[in-house]
Length: 315
Image (cartoon, rainbow, N blue to C red; front, top):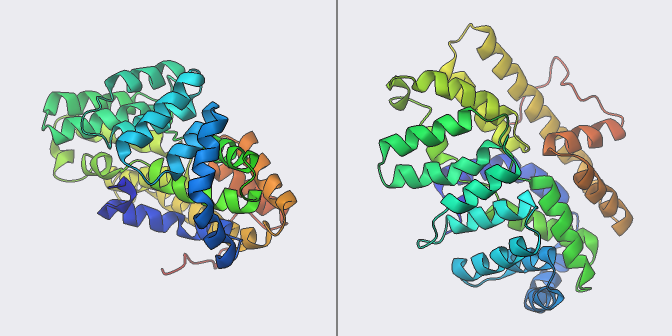
């Protein structure tokens, strides 16, 4: 089962819902047409045989996790210096019972030593096996990192272009479809990381300090979901009334405002392939989803800061 469908995954998917929906500028008929073409698209991507095409084929295949892992493994082998492909391979490995993520985590750490996401699958494995020492080791490794990246922007840019290159759909439809598969396959579960940084786990010796560092690492991640997890952890590990708590509250408000504002802008942005290409270019030239949102908002002439009377939707 894809991790995004687990309970916390549903909550996290909600954070992305307006963003993904905003990107879905194609009407339902266009999307239905593409879905009918998926088997032909997957076959064409496999025949193309390059790293991005194989990774895109993996994301769109309806076959088993093991078969998707085989395609991701082939893709990563063709481009061994691509962290984004290793991440997709590592995520899929976590869904296959017989796959040991240790070597892949080491590879990702070698390619991107500042990225704490490399250790997330090892944390999941340690918690599943009730290995306390391995759990602490993985948490400490994440806490010692500088950020938590899942390569959201480059993955969508690369794979959308690969889909277009096999000429089964237009860029706007491909972009929407790839965003959907990335939401299901590239985003980690986060339950275990979140659970280790809340009561009663926070009562363990040294855990509070580790989780304060993890909160900062997550806030530096390359997606809003990761940032919001970091802010949620920060609000648990710092007392109300502290400057750190207040900073987390303020940062959450800004992030929610920017997600909401970008979501209002994007539906009008993909009416043509040229407009979709502009968005793909933003993805390809910015590390983080948050940076793309800021670019979209400022290009539309809107303020990136919430007005004093702005309230979070549903608050």
